[in-house]
Length: 522
Image 1 (cartoon, rainbow, N blue to C red):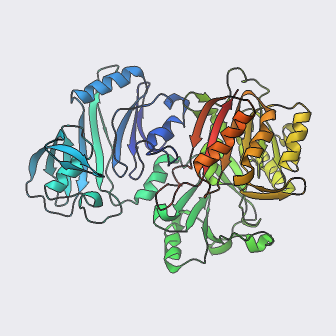
Image 2 (image 1 turned 180 degrees about the horizontal axis):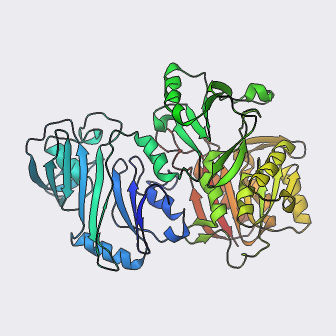
Image 3 (image 1 turned 90 degrees about the vertical axis):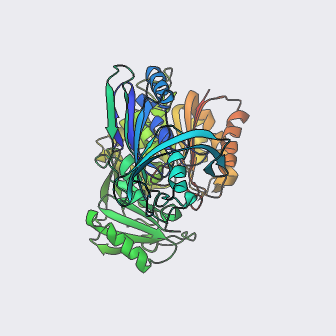
């Protein structure tokens, strides 16, 4: 069970939404909202319906319907005002009355909402609980109504800069409680979640969506989205990996030290675009504090174990931004109405081809799910590393294929042999070079890569195409991928675009860089 889940039965899913995460994606290629992320995570959540919304910076209790019965019942209860909600807010301004009801018509004015004669009626009951803590009960369900009414009555919410609130690390508004009747039984239900405005809101997102029992690797600091332009920190099991284009500043040292109670040691890697020709020692992260990591150590992601190392050069063995995509292979659930294997292809002999396999992370997850895998890479060292990852998870690598060589050359060979795969993974580096093919650049050659892979993909098979080329717009990436599918006279049956996971938050200051599309291809 995810930490954010408060309650679940056949009809309902109730969660504690973290502040800083949208209810749903604000645009097609932005980070997922909690609703989008949940629907794509579990098959039983594929039919989730949004009944009400919380603003991005508002935390607290949300209820989703899992069935048409629940959707109809909850929609009717909200419409007839039979659902009772209680919010808590912090303010640093004096509330003049201990208890009152604010009532006005609210209309949109740019990014804000204001009381206006032409708006929709909004009614909010306020009650002072402490000097700075206020209870708010919305008697209607208008967008931003609590924020508007608090600001217009002289006590804007702390952190709510849009409505004149004083600066703070988050908007201090929390949906503390919701009460309604169960859609099937009629039983009166109340769900609550405590407010913790002092907690690190950015850390709370990670805590809400990552089960620590299953996963001990995550990104703790994601650049400007977490207030640290150009600096990235990951927890890799018992160790921290810091990355930036310069040596650590004193402020960064202090921030790393705050993570120290939960880790044994920390390393720092200086990011550089000029890593070709550097030795493994020169490109590897450097020890900062605590214990020195073993030459190889094991981490856990979605209950799968992987071997990592700080001594093998620029990469440590696993790219955490692909966690959710690897999980899709484990569960067989790509997204709502998009199973990994169609009923036509679902057999004991289903196969996956992992091109540019690196240390075979995708392959291990597919193998655990029962697929036979072929891992193709230009590095013998990484293929051996991949074999060790198979062994770590009690999977016999001898039952799977590991091919050393150029991707284009080997895809041609496999096609000549008549090989066909149910799933093909294309996750190339932004640049690579081989004797057979020469230079490969994703922006220039991705379409060619897809064209080379398609003859190996079975009808109704699934193609996973991904790139971390930050400067390549998602629209052009999708044009390259889907254009190649259409050029091959094949039809796209299903499509799911997946950005980076929630611990890699997307913001205006730190736009999305990872682009992934899953295609079901006829």
